[in-house]
Image (cartoon, rainbow, N blue to C red; front, side, top):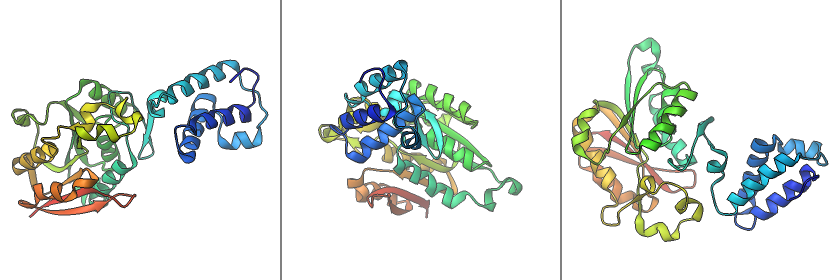
Length: 293
């Protein structure tokens, strides 16, 4: 790209480059997002003013973004932002990029609890625990939609907790963030008894790394993605054990899991709980709703 180029020319070149490594739809989505954020140019602006000349400094910024994108770096990390539940979250390589499937997990909770039973007028308070909070997207979305709740969120990564705390401050959500390794049962005394436990834990066996996209394996935190091949269900086993003492009467558990392991994941909880498998927007088994029997 060069100086004294128009919106239309730059957009076309940017899109053409991205189509070399992304599908046409993905390339267009990324291009639109980049141009709106970096250049303040929306799709409607391209239609209205296709021949408007773009400033040199904007061209340089777009070039910089394109260079990173062509190295498979996710646009969310390049721009430092991601959208979740219609809220903008700060993200970097310390946290996973929030995904639509996880929005569905949050919506399952809201469908069960966002009603008059837990309104401010009722005086009833829900206690919620988000295990492995990352950017804080789950905890913050729940807190901002279930106003009569106390939300606790844990993570083993101090870098992730820094981002989560910043997001909570920016989005005006009061969250009790707790730094601990949930796999260490000796740390559980730091956590209270809970009505709702929710988690999108690491669940990808490390052997699958070789088949994942570069934008995932090269940039997103492996600690938040992968589990050992020998213990792929470790987080679900720990959650089940934790719930035996910490899940309150009539409490529920909501977890996201690997699409290939629905039966195995459900089986971990079925001894002590009623388990329902839910599909995501792509028709894949993706979430469990778990009730005490």
